[in-house]
Length: 99
Image (cartoon, rainbow, N blue to C red; front, side, top):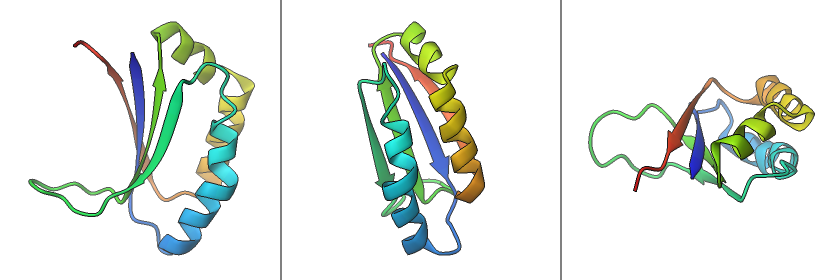
């Protein structure tokens, strides 16, 4: 399994960001052909350490090849350009499940 997490820093207007993400950006991402599932999450607390992010997106793919296919698609290009047009600064991390 492959998980891709996108971590977003706090936006200037959280309510507007959430609305735009849920109504505009997430539908673009949900069109990825090989993604098994995805979630958009709001950070409510940090239990230990510093975590500079306010939101996260997590997508799940069965295989690395499925993830690569989706991320090299025109749909991914469209979604990436969309995120860059409205989202606060973000970082992307990819996890490969080992157990």
